[in-house]
Image (cartoon, rainbow, N blue to C red; front, top):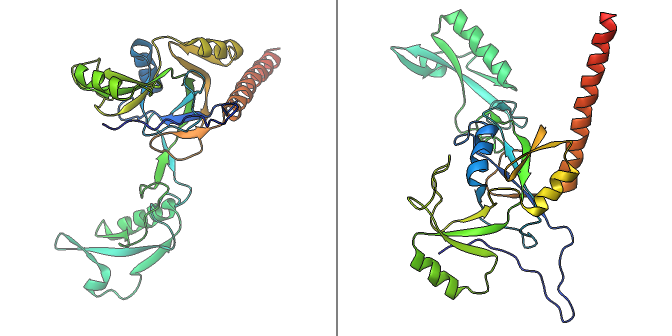
Length: 301
């Protein structure tokens, strides 16, 4: 049975060495299962948050570390690394000619000029293809030369998700899912010292189905309660101007753009950096709104 790796504070002869500021994490919410942020928040209000984790940092502290959540809502932007082409390096395209309903490289049909060209952006390639299609009535086209190196930043798609950090929650326990109660009892006897991990019966027909399906047996999940924990309530008091409370999730009034690429699993982030950006963004929105109102009032006069 696989379980999540949870770090334990190092012990010395005199005291236990603990980190004063426990690390916070960032995880993505998949747009395939939750098309919008509101869909995920609505489910969390009913069932709580349950996010699968492959590992956790050793200093992660339940009830105090924050779990920030990001979502792209299906939006994508052009990849900066490959400029929308999906390949890196010198990007070459070759001319293809339609012969007897089969697309054939121009070199095989006797063409000796304009067989290959170099492009630098996706827009440049689109213009080249459009002009060629109009000139040849769709019988000629350009395509990327095979065996070119795919862009690792976007996995060769040419675009990446345009994500935003929309809120956070405070996990209070780690649940390890089993398929039956005897397996839970055996694990409890065998791992008495693993107090941070809570064995539960889950999976198909044992719990409510979520947007992403049922939880998998043998996997570990960061879990919140149905409502905010005491620590989360303290955070909402300090950030009441910038957030809205939806059950266990603290949702930002103005989501923060996330410039990084989408990833699987968890990523360690700095709480102070995200919250300071949140305050600056909210203050900026309010200032813009006030200035807009003042301009409209002056025009009315």
